[in-house]
Amino acid sequence: MTDPAITIGGELHIAGLASVDVGEFKPKPTALTAGLVEASRVLWKSPDGSVSIGVWECTTGAFAATRSGYSEVAHIISGRCTLTAEAGEVSEHGPGDLVVTNEGWTGQWVVHETVRKLFIIHRPVSGS
Image 1 (tube, one colour):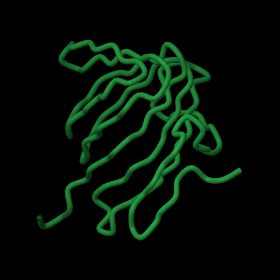
Image 2 (cartoon, one colour; image 1 turned 180 degrees about the vertical axis):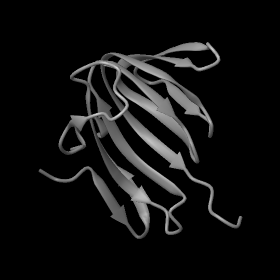
Image 3 (spheres, helix red, strand yellow; image 1 turned 90 degrees about the horizontal axis):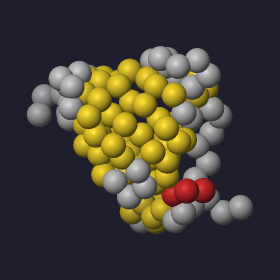
Image 4 (cartoon, one colour; image 1 turned 135 degrees about the vertical axis):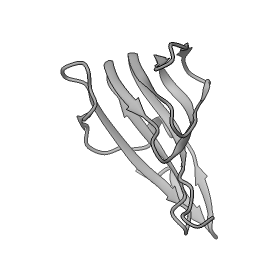
């Protein structure tokens, strides 16, 4: 099978995000539900390490999340989830949705149907 993530001349080309192999599923360290597992694969990283792009998948259940030191833009490829911010804001997400969690965001994810997302993580570069 051909890898759907191909780098050509420094450009990242991804075909078929739904079929990218995310690797071995492992228990999520911040799981609030027994049996919840996740897997991810970084497809590209900027030379300075400030930006990472990849695919993540997580099974049903709940987990705590904190965006400490980074922000994330996520495009939901498949599945359904509810995010509840620590301040109480609730948002429902499904295929095609774009979710932005800013640096410092704290809350909980509840995965109703296994979620697969494309993620873009931005970590500020020291000294900039």
